[in-house]
Image 1 (spheres, rainbow, N blue to C red):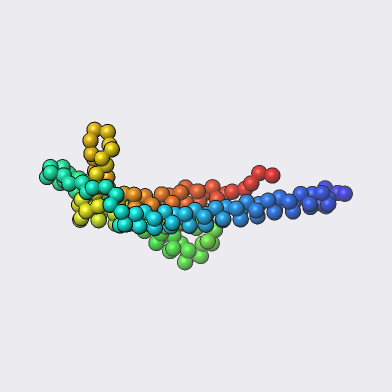
Image 2 (cartoon, helix red, strand yellow):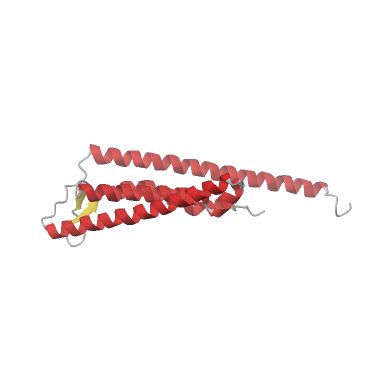
Length: 185
């Protein structure tokens, strides 16, 4: 056969390669769905454990200056994460404006539209948790009685925040890999 015509072996290898790519993509979709499901389950179990069981005693600081410094840090964290959320929201709005100007959706994916949406959500969650810790102070602060050097404060809202943000950050870090994924043959 001439080089322009594919042989039956080449056609069969092409079918195998295409099916392998499709299998890998399906496996990636299943793994993503299972990750989402496990994240929701963990969040629900954490919330249940926080309200159902007396996990540890509340942390009460007698040092007023220490409480003021901690509260000020939460206020600054709220301002910084809120500013980052506004920046990412501006990126999302800019990308949406570009979409209405006629760019294809593939161009938006390549330029990071999905990442901006995810990071905007991460910063909004951070802002909400820092704001709650700033306003309510030691409302959800417990003591770690087993810490080296004596009891120390444990901010329970940080774990709730991590339950939302870590899966989102994992999705954002894997977006580029998933978009450009090509299994080896």
